[in-house]
Image (cartoon, rainbow, N blue to C red; front, side, top):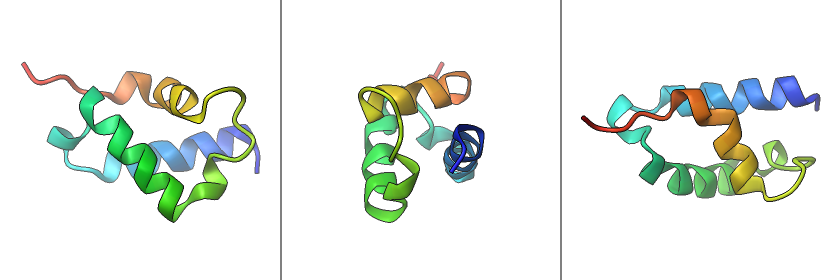
Length: 65
């Protein structure tokens, strides 16, 4: 799977979550969900998959005000 396709799918799953469940605190739970349900999306990521996932999501992580 191409990197752009993988990142697009990950972002799509992230954006399906309610906005109040898209905070930095939720990234770890999301990473676990991806690992259990769509582990193939984490294959081929360079370095630490969690850090790579945070990089993919970086502009779409909300912090409560």
